[in-house]
Length: 255
Image 1 (cartoon, rainbow, N blue to C red):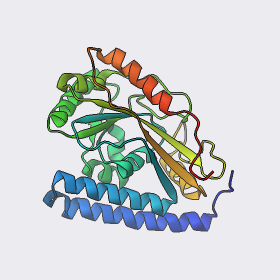
Image 2 (tube, rainbow, N blue to C red):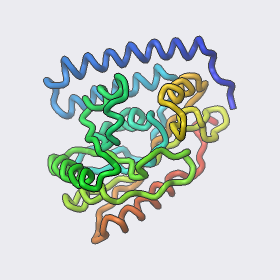
Image 3 (tube, rainbow, N blue to C red):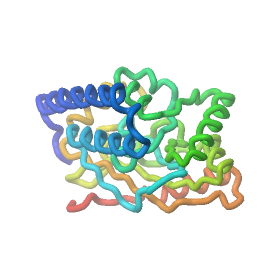
Image 4 (spheres, rainbow, N blue to C red):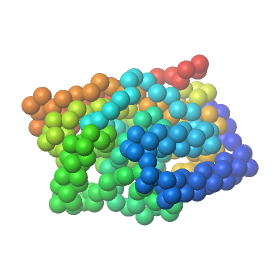
């Protein structure tokens, strides 16, 4: 595995990233209201891809990205970087835990992109969000959720919570399994740089990501599924298996 980049390289990346975040805030406050949904999606995708380039993260997409909604994406959850990576592959409206809204600066960006927030400890709030998701799906939106409910280490999947899957059942919308991985480009092994676990702070995780020398963000799309009579718990279990099947060990191109 390659040695971490120097602090000076990371600081230079951080400065450029801050400037790019400020540009994103300006776009949200001055331009978003005048754009159509398709134009917003294009802006989000290009802004996200540029941010990955600034941070030195290479995006690698496998499978067939979605074309249009209504569609619910379900993905494993590893890092704060997941939303950025998925938006760079194909923008979606995310359902995220409520405390993300209060992240400094980043929370404003994530909110501006149309994120729906949920108090995960509240069953009543889950039902509120399911109704919001159903309305968005009926409006042909593409939504994305992390049904594990928290971040993992990129290895074994945590159980999938089923509550939010109900929105797809209620609207008869398809669900697309998505697998996320972060690999070291030199060795092809899993990278711990972007992990956001335990006592690791957001700043610490961002810093280790900025110092990563050759970080590959892998987005693998599976095949869309219909409910086909399954209830939300059965479907959540099948979707977990589908995401797990996409997380087989793989090497980055050219490694």
